[in-house]
Length: 379
Image (tube, rainbow, N blue to C red):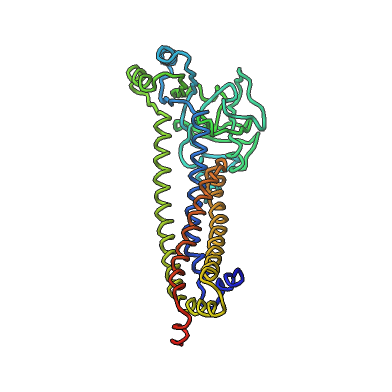
């Protein structure tokens, strides 16, 4: 029976290839969705609650720093506040070449497009690891120095000792690259491509930004208190951002499910068409097998094995292509951890395999009632 099932898959007129393409595409989309969605959900669940602050506060006047800290301490005793000076700057030249003169930006040079946040610090920022060069002394007063993100330096092809020209508030400033940092963007704190020595930017007009990590205090009450005292500031609630990201993931999932459903329906239509097209040939096979002594259950079992093999091929194709696509999106594009929910992925494949097997068997059951004598008289 197994040999008969295998032979039926590549018999003349068999539409095995068309079925693998049609049904395999839909299953691949579902596997890709399951892998991407579960990995993204795991990244948000495992990273955001553990490392992210509760609120970001922007545009704090420098003169109001002490008052700001006092209000935060009054509203949420024990809250952790991290304040950094914030400016906007544009990289206009690096390694002896002007960005405006480049015919094409290097691949991955998103930070060369327009203004980026810059800051200054006398100590290595939290969430960064020094990988090359040295940090400047706290009392450094020499020519401007800058610490650059390692990946940005690799994209631009520069290193420690090279010069970088940045336009800040319309004034171009040339700084020597003193060090390269590995930035952990997953901390969701203030991470900057460029960190300057304090003497380079301290005299420029700028404001402060802060992250607030509260311990049980009301985020709403904190926001109302700060906005009442400092109307010019902007507050970003991390919880709301995470909720929006979750909604976005849900919408993305819905779109992929719809696309996958269309592909699955098209595959089912091809499967039903293949069953209808091969009905006469299968009826003839059934008659011959019954004449040779095969029982209905043996014939149905052979066809069940055939559709089970087809479902297995579909599952393997969908598993391979779907996981490869999901891995590429998560690891290469988002640069997140690859953590698919294997139960969800395998359940998706199982559902597709059962659907294929079920439709195939339902189409085969009517053939079991064909009587050999009547069929042979009709020849």
